[in-house]
Length: 290
Figure 1 (spheres, rainbow, N blue to C red):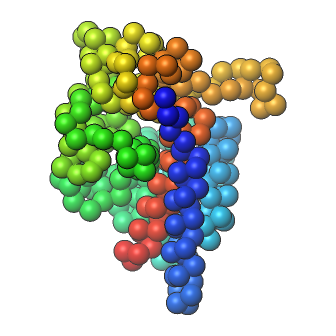
Figure 2 (tube, rainbow, N blue to C red; figure 1 turned 90 degrees about the horizontal axis):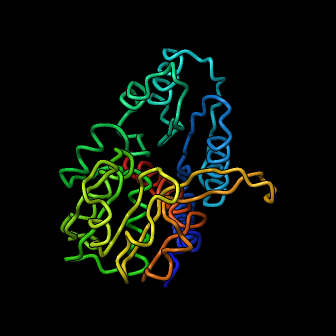
């Protein structure tokens, strides 16, 4: 079994981006600028935004984090998004999800200028993805495809089962895997928790991409011998033995599945670092487009 190392792959991507940023600066142009909007005090969101700040510093991007208390009104947040849309010094920005329950997440996504939507969530970018037109591909699906590409995993003609149908991961990665590209050209089944005969379906997959959001949902009997398994899930569970007080558990029962896989991603250091690297790639693209 080969462990898919997203940490080392993302480091390679950051080095490649830094070289391009150095070249941009050498011409006298400003570097790419990524902004993040953080609402509330969710610990996981704060940690994720902090990592994005470090990533930006490493590759030479400018970065801005706008922090708001969780009692900000929906209109106040939409007004701030409008300001970011109009700010020519910012190439791309994200609104870290989830937002507080009194704010309509759909309104937030719809308010973002598609040309600055480096998360790839707005309808124009999703529609362009479906049509195979230039777009910002959402960071996690793009990171998965990049991981597959860099490990030279063969996808053409393979049966790929994507477990989970979210607009952020499952649906877009299913589209990407079915495209006439490399990687791609797979025969894709998009499954979910209500799919009938789910165990048999998953066990038929040459490539199994799991983003169902249920801790250790995929067990050994759901994995074909020699399959490629990519685990997108991440659930925090209390762990007093850790300095952080918690550990992350994936959607795949790693210990009992690993011996059946040809390639397998791990919850820590797998897809997560690739997601962050993809956000940097999208921001660089936004800078180049302006």
